[in-house]
Amino acid sequence: MGQPLLTALVDDAAVFPPGSAALDDAVPAHTGHRESWYAQLIGPLLIPVDDRDAFRALAPPGTGVGLVGAPAAIEAAVDDLPAGTRQIESPVAKRGEDPRPGIERLAALMRKREEPWQWYFEVPLAWGLMSALDTVAALRAEGLPAAAKFRTGGLAAELFPTPVELAAVICACRDRDLPFKLTAGLHHAVRHTDAETGLVHHGFLNILVAVLHAADGAEPADLAAVLAATDAYPLADHARAALARERPLWVGFGSCSVQDPVTDLTALGLLDRPRPTPPASAS
Image 1 (cartoon, rainbow, N blue to C red):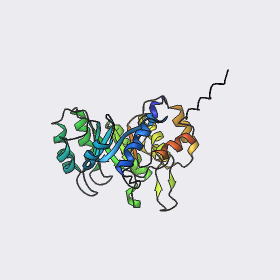
Image 2: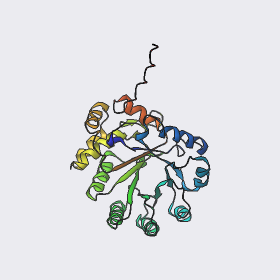
Image 3: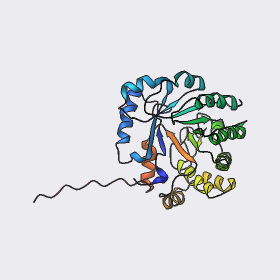
Image 4: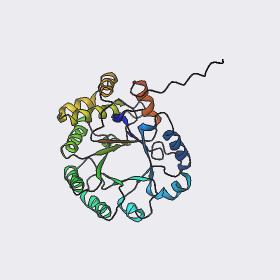
C-alpha cells in the first residue's frame, strides 16, 4: 500500500458490539485481513483480556493482539498476556467519575513492566477530562508508553460528541503532544445519519483530515467545520494529497467490520486494489 497516512489506521474489533463475532470466527478472519492486499491498513485484533487463553489456542504464532478490560481485569492478567500483545486498553472511569484514580492505578502497573506495550487510557468526554489528559501526558513525559482513548459513539445520542467537542479534544491532545485513539461509532468514512437509529455518526475520514489540520496549527473552530462536513470529495482530496505523510496525533480506531473502511476508502480512491495479473498467453 505504501501510504503512511493510512498505515495501521483500523484495529480489528470484530468481537465487540455491534459486530460481536465469535472468537473462533474472528481469529481466522483477522489472519485473512493480515494476508490481504489491504493488510497495511490493519492493526491488531482487539479482544477482551479475559479471552486471552482462547486467543492463544486459536491464533497463529506472532498474531498481534490488543487486550481490553477494566483496570482490575488488567491487574489480574498482566503477568499472563499473550506473546503477541501490542497494546492494553482500559476504561479508567464512568461518566461523572474522576478519571485520575483509574489512570494512576494502571500507571503503577506500567512502572513495573519492561514490555513495550502501548497503554490506552479510555477517558470519558465529560467532567475531569482535561485534568486526566494532563495526567496521561505527565506519564508520557516520565517515559511511559501512555496514550489516551475516547469513545465517539454508542447506543445513545449523548455518547456521540459534537463536532465542537471532538475538535476541542483533538486540539487538547495536540497541545499536550499526546497520541490518542478512538472507538465506537466510526462505521463509515464521512459524517452521516444512521437510517435505522437516527443517530449522527462521525466519519473517520473527517477525523483524519481534522488531525492533519490540527497538526498544522488549526484552531478548534476550523476542526469543527471539518468534522461536521458531509461532502466526501473535498475530504478525500485533502487526504489524498497527504497519503505520503505520517499520520499525526491519531493512532487509529477500532472497527467491528474491517471491510467497511476498506470499502469506503477504495470507493473514494484512497486505497488502490491491485489489478490481477493477466495469465501469460500460450506460446
